[in-house]
Length: 172
Image 1 (cartoon, helix red, strand yellow):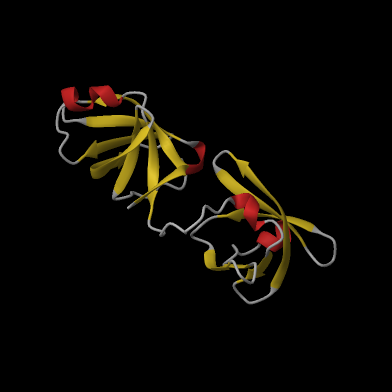
Image 2 (spheres, helix red, strand yellow):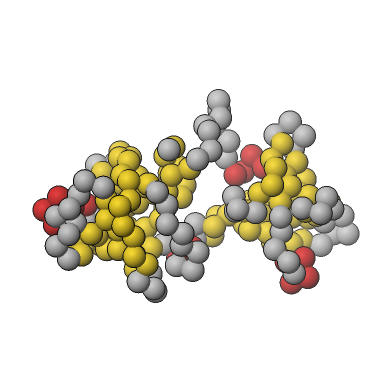
């Protein structure tokens, strides 16, 4: 379980009920793409503190109700109001930090081994990273950078292989 400060799930609004459940207002990126993680980090006094999730109820819209292992009363979770919640990352930490901007100049290959183009720009938009890719014929396409789409990442060859959603090349 690794803390990843770049993946903000949401913010705790208040305690919910009497069993230690909290109400979380989700970030826009997770409203339609929420999948229950096993653990999260709460930012308490500016420091990440790990918590295991014992129960999770997505109530639709932008609201999530979470319960944490070992926290079974309102008194135990009342102090969490206002805390930001970050997702954990299963990826191992690299010896040096690697930022999204470091991928500028990499080539992007589709899952079918076709050259898509070269990454010209990386933009974070509401928690989602968007790559601007220049193709060989001078066209620019926008591609979401998401770990679920990533097949391989080679820093030495400056090459990224992704399973691009069907029709993405057609709409750009």
